Structure formats: C-alpha cells, structure tokens
Image (cartoon, rainbow, N blue to C red; front, top):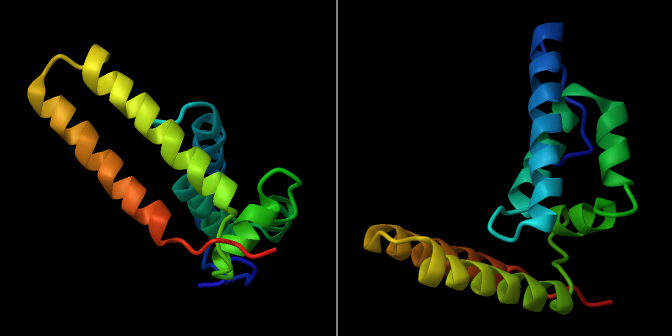
Length: 133
C-alpha cells in the first residue's frame, strides 16, 4: 500500500472512522516523540494509512509536514532513516525502559516484558536501512 494513493470507500461513515482513527494515531505518535516508551513510527504510519484511505487533504498535509513528512516519505519508499535517528531512538529506548525496569516496575514479569519489548523494538530499528544523504 502506498500512502499517497486515494482509495474509494463505500460510505462517508468509513471515511469519518478512518479520519478519527488517523487523527488519534497521529496524536499518539506526537506524544511518542516526547515519551520514548511510546513508539512514534508505528502510529505515524498508521495515521498515514488511515488518511490515505479517508482524506486526500489530510494525507497530503501529513506527508508534506515539515516535522515528519520527509521521515514518513523516506520510510514508505524504503530509503531508511538517518543514522543519528537510529542511535538516538535506541539510546532513549534503553534509557527509559532500563530506568522503568530497574526503578518503577516492581513485578518481575513486568520487567521481563519491558526488556522483551525493548529487544523487539531495537531489532526493528536496526533492521531499517540507514538513509544515505
């Protein structure tokens, strides 16, 4: 699926649901920029997918947004993400999850789950190409 292609939907209700879901997902993605435990990329990609099917105007706005438009376009095209973003993402991920596992979460199972999530996200980030400028 390419996020710039507009897909016809059978009803305006579907468009509204997708627009609301995309906006909610975009909000979570923006919050994820500030809170490293909340992933940013999946929510921004979900917002782009929802907007591509519901609103050409919102889709164009998101993909041309000065903060994350270029990032989304490069990710969708498979070009990758800058090395600096990879390093910062993994660093913040492990700092916040490490702190949470050591000092916040008291239950052993919770600590294990946090570490497993961190490992999975790290593997995903490392699997993304490094963007060559």
